Image (cartoon, rainbow, N blue to C red; front, side, top):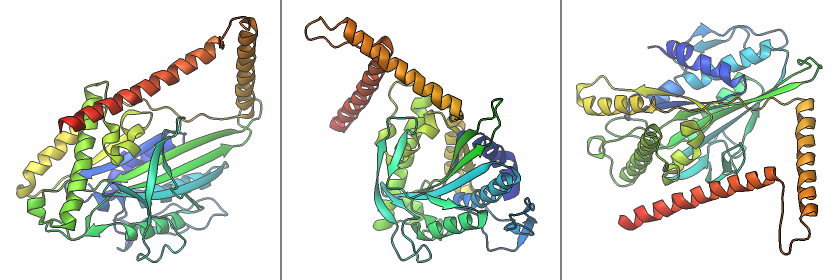
Amino acid sequence: ATQENIYDKVVSPILGEVMQGFNCTLFAYGQTGTGKTYTMEGDLDTPATSRVPTPVAGHDLLSNARISAQAGMIPRTLYNLFYALDRQSAEYYVHVSYVELYNEELRDLLAGNDLTNEEIPAGGNLRVYESGTDKGVVIQGLEEKLVTNARDAVALMQAGAMRRKVAATRCNDTSSRSHAIFTVTVFIRERAVTVDGEDISKLGKLNLVDLAGSENIGRSGAQNVRAREAGSINKSLLVLGRVINALVEKNTYVPYRDSKLTHIIKDSLGGRTRTCMIATISNAVDNIEETIKTLQYASQAKGIRNRPVANKMVSKSEIVHDLQQHIERLNRDLEAARDSSGAAGGFFVSKDTYEELTTNAKASREVAEEWKQRVALWEEE
């Protein structure tokens, strides 16, 4: 399949859902040297053959522009995203971020002002934490760049890619030694579209994930530092496989926290994100074992059933409604406290607040149980 065919059949529908306010993720998974990075980033230096459609007047950036036939999913997504946004009358903002996971350390590939100098180290070691809200897992300190056109966004992708860890092995001269996640966040505000003439806002996010390839150290010839890198890559991919197994089998315990990779893509694996995996394989007979494993991996991942939900479309009336509900709940808490003020040492809240506290307590118990099981596994090892 060509890059254009993959984009049209796989990525284009996903981009449409992002613009409707969904969170989506695209993975590239496979053995080292099978073309994952090429699929995601492509080669933008080859002669351009595909013409990018001319957008509406006032935005001449892409006019008569051509995109390389070897361009990967990320640049194609960015060009088509801005083309679609420019055709609308809605107000929009687009932010991008680029992070890599190298030896279980998160590094911001877009940190700093001088992105043209690949000798300047990327920002790291970033921390990951649970936000406790609908945002899910958050990478603290990760820089998001505001972009106004596709060319600037692609330039950031290229600058970040130059900072990414790569090295030569027997299997690949430019083997990626880290997992990388390029994230595009799109905010769209449609003016006066409701019956009451109110604005509606939509927030969509697209994670484009280039996983480092699974690697047989004996065949790749990795030694010393390269062997440690390969070990870290294989470990994180092994945990990813365990997570997929647990989700397919609907286990009560899913080991998301056993690796930072599965932790930061937790929502993409078993949450509210619409997720697609591109499996890359080799046509060499020598790689038949790895090819079979990759296909089995992808086939098993198809068994996961996420629950995609569009991010809330906010209007003024909805905000007022939410505030009114919050005030009413506080009033019920106050009435409950007044009605039961005579009881010694008691603390009373409304039924709604009690249910929320019970839900939060249950979530805390689940986290505690997860850590308990992890400690038990460590002790066994």
